[in-house]
Length: 105
Image (cartoon, rainbow, N blue to C red; front, side, top):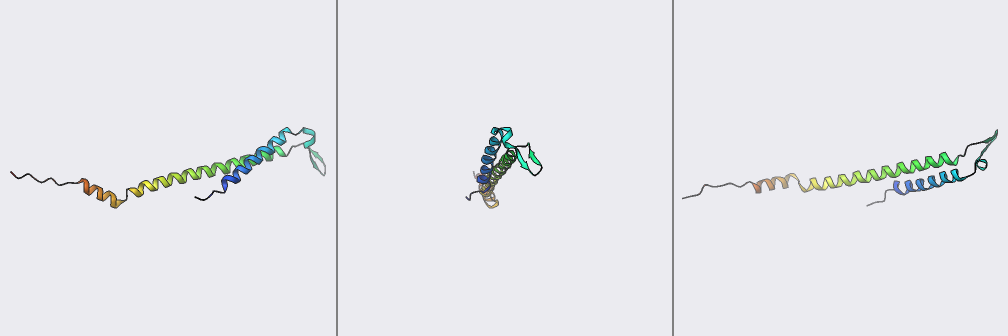
């Protein structure tokens, strides 16, 4: 079975997004100002980007897990339908059907 790339990349975004958001929340308010040409912007940019990265990673991992679960369900369904192919079911039906002959006295 091949490795689904969405899982490690999703975990990467989950971990880095959580770390970035935690860093943004733990940074004092005065030191996290974003410097622009017109002055400082009192926004800690690490918090929203950390949350967005975390949500993207969560979505990526969720889609990968749902897809692998759906694929496993399809494989089990295909295996169960392959076991009862039309030829096998006709053979089983013929084996179950028996003719009863009248007894000679």
